[in-house]
Image 1 (tube, rainbow, N blue to C red):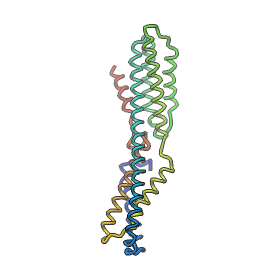
Image 2 (cartoon, rainbow, N blue to C red):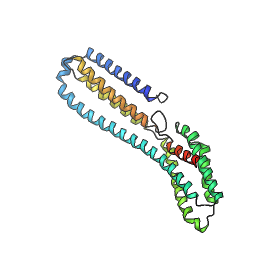
Image 3 (cartoon, rainbow, N blue to C red):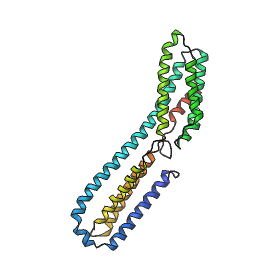
Image 4 (cartoon, helix red, strand yellow):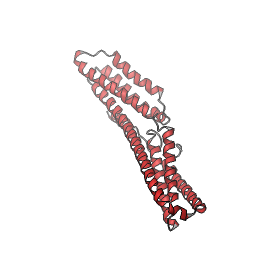
Length: 255
């Protein structure tokens, strides 16, 4: 499922789910007396209202959570790039030899993030070479002994360096966090139950019920596909891109 693009997998999944639901509905009504179903409409309707509300709340809750996680992952990447940009600006106040080291090291790090670490994060992995480039930036600051006139810039640079390190760590962790299997089991089973409950109602004509089941199945399936896409912020078609780093690289090349 993760290997297929959402634009291809999504429609196929919706069509397959709707076809299965309608097929199951047709088979169910073939072996069950409709009059018996009509006699139980009052009880079935009450129970379905409770089941539907519970599942809708769970589904909405998960959608909100994965969207917030996706948005946080994007924000962490922007924060990381922003802190690197501030490091480069503060470094302009340092001696030329140190400034050139910081500019080269940060630029090399950003290139490595875009070219090597971003593809690695699609599989929830961290690029070891990029990590070492981050450590090298720390070494430059540890070895630098600022003059008294540079002390204020140096202290502020250390704050930006720590913030950059934290943002990087959060970015890596975001590529590894996913919805646990037990939650997926609940979402899928809840969807099957929600759709299956509609089988207990017998409409005077078949097509309104078939249309209702098809629409309900399609909406639930599309929501699950959305959750799956947002659950992996650095892989698939819907993913966080390294635009903030690419912007800094572009500006560095202009300079």
